[in-house]
Length: 288
Picture 1: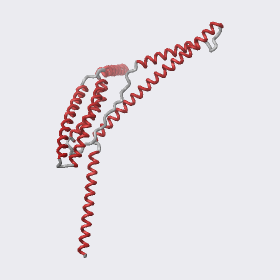
Picture 2 (picture 1 turned 90 degrees about the vertical axis):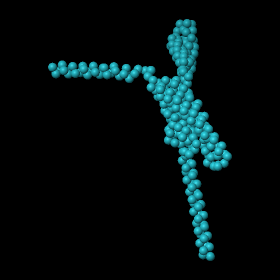
Picture 3 (picture 1 turned 45 degrees about the vertical axis):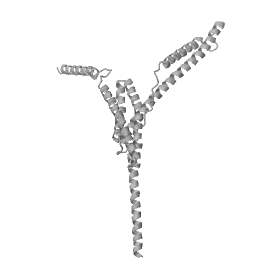
Picture 4 (picture 1 turned 180 degrees about the horizontal axis):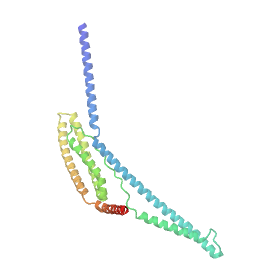
């Protein structure tokens, strides 16, 4: 009886130990999956750069809208002032002509002057409103792609894509200072090319999940072949991004349209040299 109880106790302890180990392994697997799904440092940096760019575009759009609204208000107010003051001025002119006295609402010249000023303000505001450039565009930038497990097929290419996109987003402000049109074209190209490539990254994650959950099955073989094909397409996309960055680097080496640093600083250097020479001569004459 005692041996039976001892055997039952050992069996219960073994089962409890196995259950604890299984739970621990499940917890470790869950932690690994959560860590793999966490965005990388480059992905977080890319997200921050995109949010900063969108915030700057939104601020420029708000300034544009406020300026356009101010011009519209000036045009409406000027038109109203010109209409009211002109009407009152005409009434006063008629009254003065009929009675040879100051009009009912005061001197007619005052109202006519106000009408002229209002009309000029309205015309100027309308002209400025008509000549306004196109409103700044607020880009709908693509979201950062989801993280790919390190052991997945195409994980290296997915990380390379994030790195390349981060470099493109960071180089856009420098390009914009040289040529705003080129920066807009670079921004447009990235916004159009990124979503399809991000979709490829998402397919890699799905295919990796199939391979992980169904090893040794026909589904595993099909998912592996599909992942290799998707990786090949992702490699082509990354190569195109590298060409885009190479063209951007070439443009950054182009000369500025504005004056060079030597042209700006040389006159100041010459002036300071002349001042120093003059001070030395003045000090020498004083000692003499």
